[in-house]
Image 1 (cartoon, rainbow, N blue to C red):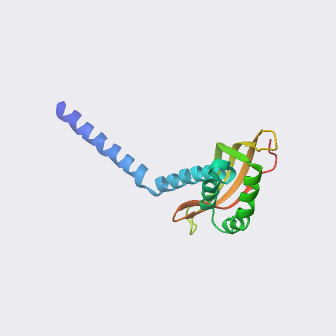
Image 2: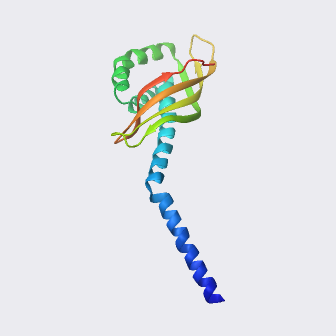
Length: 162
């Protein structure tokens, strides 16, 4: 009886090992991990491009810039200096907090891989000349996977914001 239980336990261990290996090493597992990375990146990108504080302005603008790829990167670089000057003058602070995100498209087979996501954020803004404001905002983000990770090629606020 002990020999039969030992053989059954060994067989169960082998079957479990095969399922574990196929679940963590298969193409489906790789795609699932890449999807998860894309969702996380979309949230971080939207936070980065919507968060600026007077005390960390240059670091915040750098975080936004490193989240972008062409064509959005070139557009951002064209307006960055003027944007920074306006923020310094107004002493504006905008802090975005992610609420949720979901992929709307995902193509891991494309070279390079691409993804699109919708991201919901809470935005709290204040400046020296205006009352603090809070709102929720949706962003549509188109991303490309670069050697440095997922970056936005386009990010636009969605209509119907509160």
